[in-house]
Image (cartoon, rainbow, N blue to C red; front, top):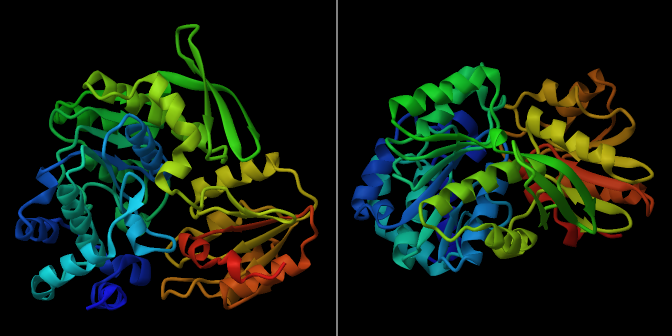
Length: 434
């Protein structure tokens, strides 16, 4: 097989959550264990950091990877889903894994895959582990796919566990209360391994404390160590003043990730960096200061309040659940523009009404859908949006919706693309006429 044929096989032959939803979710890690055994247990050949959470785990993973890269460590990074290139899921020092590696790995495991019928995610996780082992990385930052306890990544014994926050998402699989969702995410906590909790709620605190106690795992609540005293945004940069509780210490950080929701993630990342430093890793404050202004460039992160065009401003953001959209609305309140145009598409298994209820009425909407079976069709989304007084037309193709928004936008307007990672992935600015 060549590379294209290999991807076609992976995408079509394996159950894929992004395509079919919960039917692809395997409620145990047996297949991952068997696949790893077939590859000689590559996950045991490198050190790792394991990150879970409802929102922010992607940004936090990339920031931590940037810090480790800046410190001189050969750093693996596994995240999901990808936006444009499958290999975005597997990087070393910000560089995509080799196409030939993807081909060789798939051909080597194909007979075994056809025997045990793993999911797409199970295969890609083991593929990442094998690549990091082959590349002899010093450390890899591994983001969970869904939940934690039963996630394919949860066979790791990491240096540090991180749980960014808990919110309502994937409730059909993780549970319909914050406590149940937190229990699934807390499943990544390992015996004796320190865990950093980014944001904690009254409903989730006891879950984390009880799990950490059972596992004899030191637990650190990032919010109790530091807080954001002030922040400003300008020129696609975010400047954050971070203060330490109980002292006069204050540090100023600059990020090339301009979304103001990064003010939440940076508190988590700073505590994670400190815990790694206490273990002997060179993740000092000086290294963090050097890394964060270049995190996007170092790691190739996209889709987080990412401006892809000016006049009109075109912003892509992968916010897709209630908590993420709340942060996006906060960002819009601080943005400067004349009129607002929102290109939005969602998938069927999200809390669609909860999201639509949050969206501003003073925008023109372009309802659309990504080309995946999980997508809610544009007409249905438009009809549900009308219930919440969201006005606009429907478009069966993302780029048709985007082109129409651009056609109607003035130079001082803002065009926002959001609602689904898959809508963000299909938005191709190179195909748009300005």
